Length: 142
Image (cartoon, rainbow, N blue to C red; front, side, top):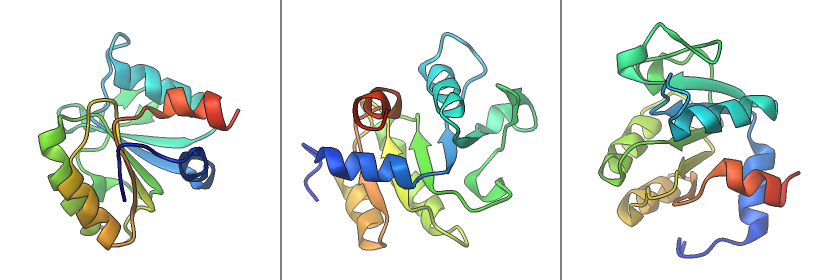
């Protein structure tokens, strides 16, 4: 897939089909983008699991934080990645190693790795990169 541009229906479909999100790179600091996006997603009814090894076991926005994707106690629909682009390939590998891989991986603004995306897509995982669900949701879903 060409990740330079997405059809609105594709992004809306990912957002509408998602119920459970692993927010990778979650921060407890209210001034961090991941904190605001997590709050936004929780307010829209998504079940969000913060993932941050340095915060594992602590709460972020009332949700227990996990060290890794594999530690999350249920299958997830979407991995929302707040990590530098060079880590996206490793995130894809971690996602593919899950018993139930996610339906989609979403790289936040500035997070793009076309090779990692191709690997995920070859395994049947939808990919959105260099976008923010807190921007796309109001525009496309409600």
